[in-house]
Image (cartoon, rainbow over all chains, first blue to last red; front, side, top):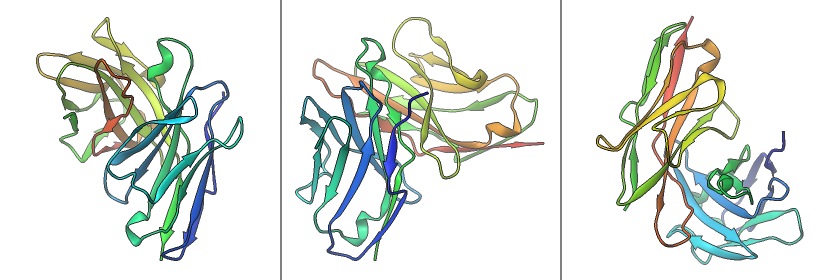
Length: 116
Length: 116
């Protein structure tokens, strides 16, 4: 069964450094998402992406964040200058093209980011 | 604004007994409701969803959930719990409006422990 994959599984970085989190959504999916989960807190929506542009973003998704689909398979989240409070598990998700199934978002295993 | 409440942080049940994990939502308009499960060091796995139609929806691994509009609830149930069902369960809602917003709003999660 196709799955969303994410790399790396863990990343440790110094405050102020740039990080890029990578995701490979399920093939033929059209909608892509990033969520994050700070330890002990809820899963929070960051951004959704469709047709090569951002379709929604939350208040968390400020100018430090950007997303890109550099080729036909990858979907990346970049944090330009990491802060301590960016430490979290970051989940990528994608949803299908098939009408009716568009509502189901399938999640990857996550990237645990630790900012020191 | 949409929100989801999972009133129980922890649910313990004996193997073979029925289980219920509670979820209530607050949203204006018609909601799409979802249940996801998270095993340790794994991503969020889709279990089931309510979009429209029959209020009782059946999902993976023998789980089901009942949409109750009057009580604004979407409780997850299983007739006979297995030890392998022990995991963190998340309820999520998507508010359906005239726009294209697809973000999911998650509850805080309920840790289910099935005791042998």
